[in-house]
Length: 419
View 1 (cartoon, rainbow, N blue to C red):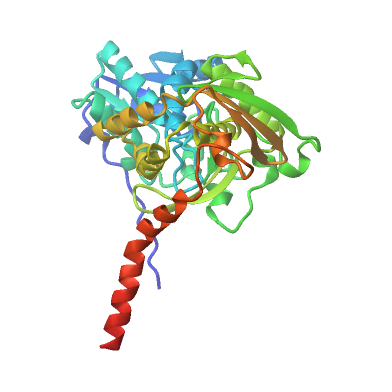
View 2 (tube, rainbow, N blue to C red):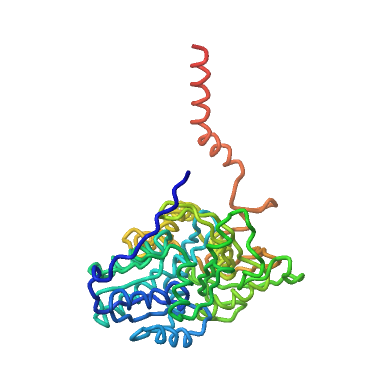
């Protein structure tokens, strides 16, 4: 008979020396609200909370009031939307980063920025400790703590999920009710969500069975393709040096541009992904994502690259996409290897300037036109009609030279068969 899992027990509070100040990455959700109270009770410390506005659309003033009510001594709520899109999302877009063929890294790319600002606040406040709400099984714990280590090697990290006696979100719900901490998560709807300007992710709860389809009422950013408009919509996106700068001729700041594309993509049911991915810590996990604007941008960017990038540069850059995406997914945004790759990628984007036309229709985003002052496409060379500049007879020698090694191998193999 299988033995029941051993329940973790809390260490005596006396074994945990008091901490001076702890800066907690705070979302106002179940986990971090419980953590705020738990840190104060367990370590008798001053807890300073930091909430980053990355476009999640929540009432941040309410989150601030909640943090104070639960016990925070000070609350930082900061609008980081422009920095997030310009300095994190757009560099990733220039690399066409996609993890395991599907995931556009919406949660992954937000963590280094949150971690960076959290460290800056800790240094400003003279706090020797930082804390986060990531579980001991997920990727975010790695992303946060690699950012901390890269930016402030001497900072100390408290990770409640590795210390406390709770083993499930049901335990947290019970703790919150016991201490009158207001929460919105219930046992009937336990899956977690993470939202920012790039995407929203869902995991846990009913989604832990990879055979169970996600309920339609779960989705927040997109309508289902079946309910999307029956009429297609055409848009044009302008790029400069690999970055999007305008929609339909109207120049927009990065955050506003992504917000507008989220609205358009969501309206047409674009950007849903249901993925069982390989976490960095070793297990497989299911995530359901909505990334409407990011999906449109990735497709548009690829379309423009097709006419502006040299073949060998494009192929070499493409060979780096998987490695670059893994670095972001695994939390190595501040690593020297990511910086090195970014330098090469950005150099390859210098001529990626122009306009892409796309059609949005029932979950699909299709490139229908592309043009650029830096285009390498030459109609007179590519045409099947009469053209100038390319002599088809040159192909004979080209093919013979490239076929030489194939012919030599076949000749050798036939010789070996005879012997």
